[in-house]
Length: 83
Image: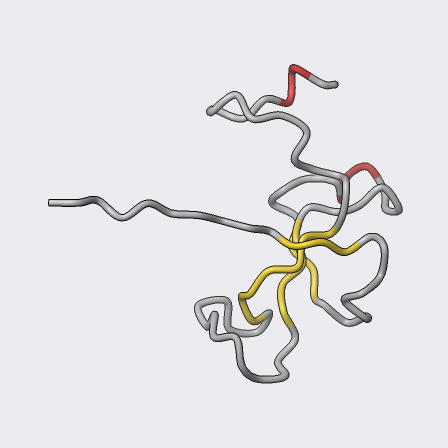
């Protein structure tokens, strides 16, 4: 919808749909274990927020119920070099 917002990899429309609930702890972003009750990082903003919050670099704290309709998940797949 917004070609001027394409990433360096030509990926489009990644920001502003939902707050993306990440595995990183808010207070200690290097901690990414699944267990625990620490507050997690939210990124990207949603349709419910101000325009300035609808960007991938925006970082917030998961203070609310993660089942809200403006929360989603950030899924990342990394390939491991063979050889």
